[in-house]
Image 1 (cartoon, rainbow, N blue to C red):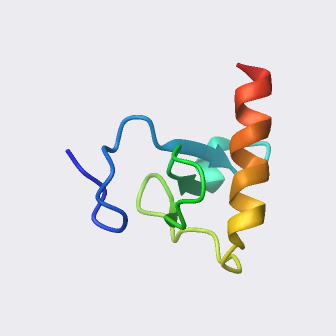
Image 2 (tube, one colour):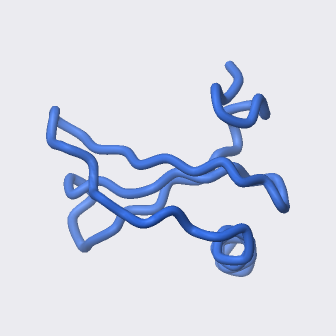
Length: 70
């Protein structure tokens, strides 16, 4: 399956929770460097978190942090 925003494969898009409880939802970004793909997610029919669109630099920092953690 491909992302409808960036057309890269959905795997390996990265899910980030926004709070302590994953039920609060979060954001999802593409794993490809310099891709501007960004969306929010939620569970159990809750409204997704409202967030400002991150810059490409913000997204690249998130990707780099994820790769360091492993």
